[in-house]
Image (cartoon, rainbow, N blue to C red; front, side):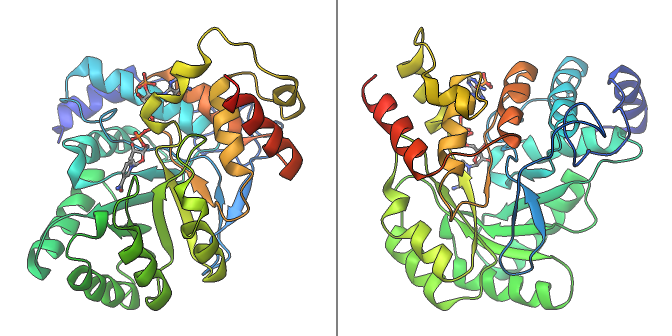
Length: 308
Ligand SMILES: NC(=O)c1ccc[n+]([C@@H]2O[C@H](COP(=O)([O-])OP(=O)(O)OC[C@H]3O[C@@H](n4cnc5c(N)ncnc54)[C@H](OP(=O)(O)O)[C@@H]3O)[C@@H](O)[C@H]2O)c1
């Protein structure tokens, strides 16, 4: 965590936000295009469709250079109407770096702060969630999810109680790859979850079989991790021209193409691509705007991708 002197130094180096708030009307400020949003089924609250992850990308030491770089990445996110930030105590120093930067922003833009609990034992879980709130500089989290189902019965009991007491707004559970899908499905069928987080992208479509349909049936919001399959999707599209369907959807990059394909699934609420680069953040946030693919366009996108 930064000391007061370091916070003031960092604040002096960050570009100021145009209005101090993340505009709901787009990157250009109040007159830009409207941000695409989807409702959280359990409450109806609208979320911008593009959020951000922090695994690896924000796990950096608190040097002035790093903070300036990551601060600029966050500014690009807020400037394009982003609010949902996903982190975890599993991601090393990522929660702390997000918190360091949020502390410097005045007024603070709207943030939907999400972290995870990733330990074993009731007391350990509570202590970890309290530490995460200090690190990420939030009074209370909007969402806390159980990371990779670890000791989920214990933490779910705590989270249900916290939600009742108003200490957290939404609760959920996460996984990635094809790990623990059967157990996750069972939890989704029986427990009152607001959110479920798992991987889904043009190369890994396992979630279409059961996770996405069940989330839709049970009114559980979905937060999609690894939308770029950790970046490996780009290996296929290097030096490839974008197809005509990309222009129909306002996609000027393969990144936007990959994100919009995911958003074309009706059970998807929000995606959390991760980046440490300002120009990649600006690229990703373009998928927060403009048309989303219908069934035919999605099929065409997959046809093009499969032929690469
Ligand atoms: N079980 C879980 O709960 C779980 C598991 C996995 C992930 N997650 C969450 O989901 C988030 C996203 O997943 P992920 O980080 O594994 O993978 P990802 O978002 O699919 O891919 C991240 C990679 O894509 C690159 N990238 C990002 N934007 C790009 C762009 N516009 N053009 C080209 N390259 C781009 C990044 O590199 P640069 O830095 O160079 O841009 C980075 O290497 C994580 O950060 C984490 O918050 C949760």
